[in-house]
Image (cartoon, rainbow, N blue to C red; front, top):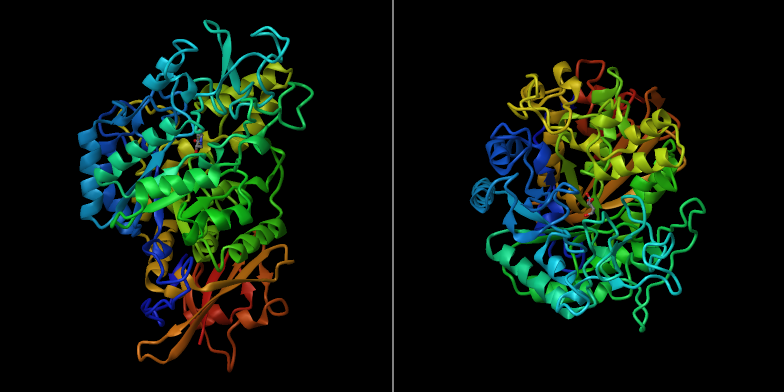
Length: 615
Ligand code: NOJ
């Protein structure tokens, strides 16, 4: 059961002091905002074809209003052959009929704006679809005016096109196999870091960049409030003066392929490109916009530069360090999470972006398995508590939190039982590749089931009806059977003890308490294997103008057995002479939810989290 303090959530510090934001000056609006990600295919279906759509989203906005989020990030709805569920775009200015029309999108934008929310679109410009007219023209011949808009290269020297290993580099595609495909007609290969239907654009060509900028301005002029930029740190490749691209290191002896990321992640011109984009697209616009760059492999030092307002590149980045901690090299080889490593990582990111720059905070998105199954405990006994606990941890860090659809009701991974149930190109290709190399199908499936992106893509569970209220038709992907056991919006909406109610409180806390949005961060007990604890502190000015400070102490038990704080963190336990108030907790106290009792209990229940305020 969740409980909050009886006192209203009132800010003690009303003015953010200069410098509390990502750079000098007042804090930007998004410092106290919460973003909600909608994956349109799986959110809500309005026309019964089994696939979510724009009208479905518009019909469910009350849920987002109740949750209190400020921004919706909409995964791609553009025209697309849907090879990668819309991350393969064939027309940047059209809506795919699967999702509706441009008018439907306008209606959604207006409806969000009317409710005080903003709309951030996905921007997928590392690559297009191979059905985009730019690529169609590019592939017509080596002399095409658009040939240089993509990466075309001949076979490796001395080799025949199509021969094993003849690809121009040994880079592996993120979706299995080589990152180059041969165009039989010209005898040249084109680069695709993702599927063969997602050819990479050549950002070295200024016409490509200008076309992207123009398209972005077009969307902003239509009222969109910013962009989440798909793998944006892959757009600058390590190309030599003679046009060649280098091989990646540490090739897998079995396939001859290497990741190659050292040659295209945060490449040599990335800062130049993003600064140029900022100048061409965003500079001088009066609207309150948001930009977030998805950046696999980005380091703290890179992120500082990308998000320092003085660099004028992007507002924040999605980094991957934490979600890479629970696997061994490849995402398909999961290992248990080491909590110490997680704390060390987030502590470094918090410290690294404390003075300049800004963090985004996420556990989930459309590419990640569900957090309650991944780092929580999705057994019936602990599922709700662990969902609340992990939500509390995320939302109490400094940065902008992102909630992925369904996370707010504790949605869990799907119990995948057969390969036929999978839809995701990455999972399907990996399974085929491994089985092709002699892997045992059941063993490979069991690993894919843990890490598959499809875990994030099962439909949002609105109610207990047969397709969870997602569609009246046949859903494009299986619905999690646990929607019949209380894991729905309808079940949780009016229950003050639900995961959903707790997420509402977390969102409100960030809005109402400047210390949550802007306070500095100090990690406590970094060596403890089950307790995740930190403080947030903000110096400022009270309502009377006098100097004031707010300090929060966050303690969480990241495990399914109780933990006694008596010796570990005595300062986190209320007692005589200690002025400690429970602002937000996840379980009631022995006294039936009395805050003082909870704050004074030295034992944290399994997955209990407390947000305490020092007087
Ligand atoms: C990252 C996106 O989040 C993912 O879903 C997509 O498959 C790749 N980029 C390629 O666009």
